[in-house]
Image (cartoon, rainbow, N blue to C red; front, side):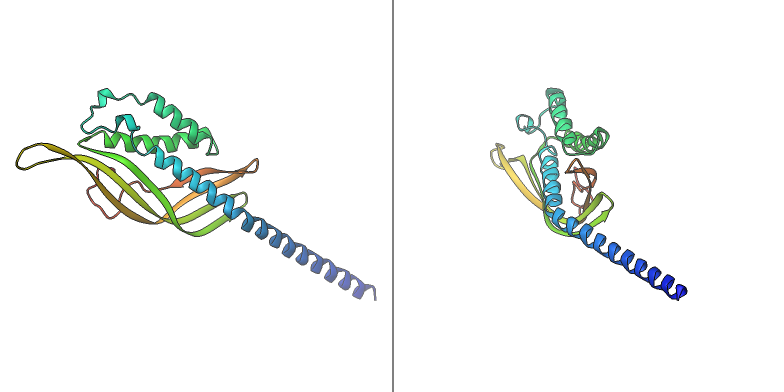
Length: 204
């Protein structure tokens, strides 16, 4: 009888353990499901910041402007501050700042065409990959770009300012976030800033 009692107690404990694990998993999954909207908002907020700082400040969006005429120190300080508010560490913010400032430097190589708008929008979230207190959001996006340039009149030689609009799709971008003090902050972002289908692109 003692043997069977031990078996019954062991079985009951095993069942309790399994039930506890299932309940825990359901609670965690429920919390993750509720967090998805906050995570999406955090991703969109970060993307809006990268949109803002992918081009030169408006006062410098001048065709054929010289690099020597541009002072971006204050612009980069503001960029760093806004990134730090949305990233897990200042080092993470510095990495993103380096990527954004690199794009601006490439634009300054040829200012006969000037970017006046860069707009990335999430089209579809493909997955939320959770790992402990981090999540990697994989999504597709569409990027719209506006550039201005001078087009010469073939007869008079006069220049007319024109605006060219283009767009491209990214099928697999991602942002990894971590929840700290109740807020989702960016750990790493894998975003494309140039058309992947274009071989020769000024901003590659």
